[in-house]
Length: 243
Image (cartoon, rainbow, N blue to C red; front, side, top):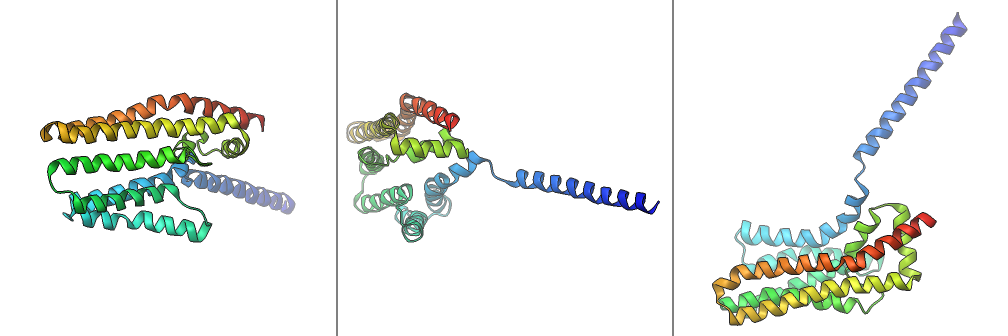
């Protein structure tokens, strides 16, 4: 009887351990962030952080536009410096947002009437457009960082496939550059249209048309960008499956 009792006790301990381990694994899996959400987090910090800080300070707390731009630059400054010191790499999205804020500070200091204010917003888009177009000539097109999370979905195999393709696939690199060229061109066209409208159309018209033009540029970039994104997704999927 003692052996049966001992065996039963051991069985209960093992069963409890297995149950506890399974429950712990499920809890860890439940708490773990979704791979795509994890991959998108840097973009949220580098882009959404400064924008949210600006609107909170300017519209929410009543700070001047100049002060709001200056204080919201703390996000990209910290991210840029941290990347240079810790990883010895340039966080290009953070650097881009920092550049946009600095251009905004300069233009805020010189803009006076309503038309100049409308033109200033367009120039900021133009600055981003030129940065994106310029990056298409480099080894790391700027918009690739924004596209990568959506194509790799945070999956390890796809992340590795992206790295291999970016390092050795000429078609993949060509589509990378094309994607940045499409987005940069859409934003640059929007900038030209808004600057022209700021000085030729009534201010009341441009007050709402500016938003329409910006949304139109984003939609255009998203739709036309599929010409590069879809072949890239196919290459990543094929490379990941072959590994």
